[in-house]
Amino acid sequence: MNGRTLVTRLMREGGLYGLTAEKFSLGRRNADVVRAMLDGGIRIIQYREKTKKMGLKYEECLQLRAMTREAGAAFIVNDDIDLALLTRADGVHVGQEDLPIEAVHALVGENMAIGLSTHSPEQARAAVSLGADYIGVGPIFATRTKEDVCAPVGFEYLDFVVRNIDLPFVAIGGIKEHNLKAVADHGARCMALVTEITAAEDIPGKIAALTRILCP
Image (cartoon, rainbow, N blue to C red):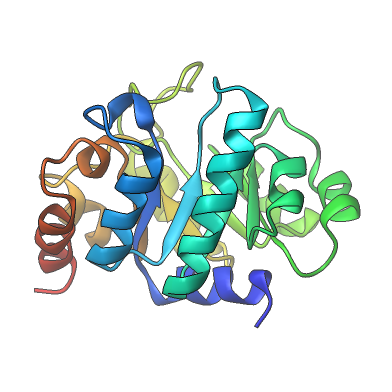
């Protein structure tokens, strides 16, 4: 199974989507946090570390790629197409101001999934027409884990995507244990929680509690 197929299948199946955020990981290394995420049952991991040196990011991605492959999980790299290619990631996730989807396709080929962050119905429709494999929908709520983030889109945009867009999607932005059920009730099947997981003392225990909300 190629990376593109794995990513889209897992996203349609639903569940939690894990992201690295070493700044918010209680001093733990990304490898230790991701191991705990995988042990807790998360099957999609995105590497998102914007400020680290490229050499360090490369070494970390190689390690996380090996871990996710062994666990049967998908590995996605945020923004860095070269890192995604060099580490044989399953997918690469880009933003509205990164390289356009058609250029990313030309670089990564047909076997790697391409995700695109979207914040409006117009951007979601464009993602479909441009050939994105999945989209990020958010930020649903206010978030402080990402710089230069746009204003929260709330449930109105999420409802639009559920009703009108056939691509797999991940809801993201300010999602916590206390509002997770509301996001699911609006139709999201795949949801990204960043600090709620990375900053948990007991990551597998936190994942279990979140999973109980989604699958009572």
